[in-house]
Length: 243
Image (cartoon, rainbow, N blue to C red; front, top):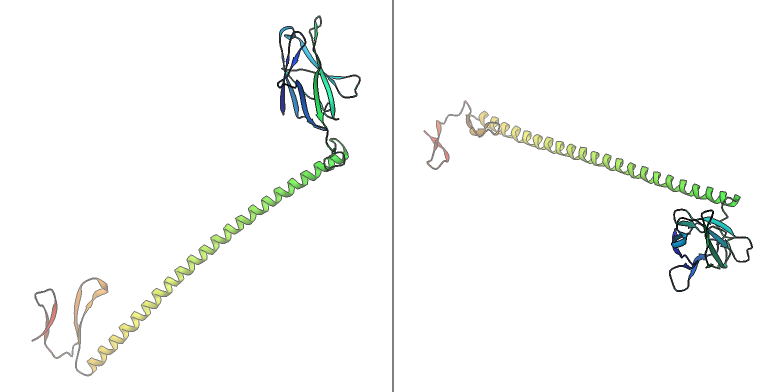
């Protein structure tokens, strides 16, 4: 709310900020926008102060009581454009002080009588309020729908990530199985070759690492006729020596 300062002097003079000594209340049909902050002094101290509103073309002014140093400008003052005035009166029942007229002005505009904003408390106003409520309800529903879509998207993203992880695990398992199968085929081929060599009465021998333990084992077939042994060549290298 716009607050305008008004000072009341003992001699009845009224002062407002600015050189015009005029209050401007905007444009026609303003309502609940302006308030006067009234500061009484001297003879006005301790009196109940009322503001009398003289609208353009009016006869009997309406009045408003100044409460806690403030009074709101009533809607009737801004209902029509033009220049009017305000007169203040202070009284305690036995003493009365009145002020000079304080001029005000309400500027004209093209009017809003046929516009989209109906008069308050009219049927058109009720329809307007209902329309605003419907729009707000639709906006809230749209916000809820958007939140639901976002939650569904998060759920879908989580499911997709889980599926990808499972697929990756399956791929790793398949790779391990293929590697094991390949190693089994290689071992089978080696054993077949050794068996064929043994079948030709040549026998065979080899070194193997037991289960990748780092321990070498010397293996030879029963029909190996050569007498052989292993020895270190002095440089940490094992070599086969025929006896």
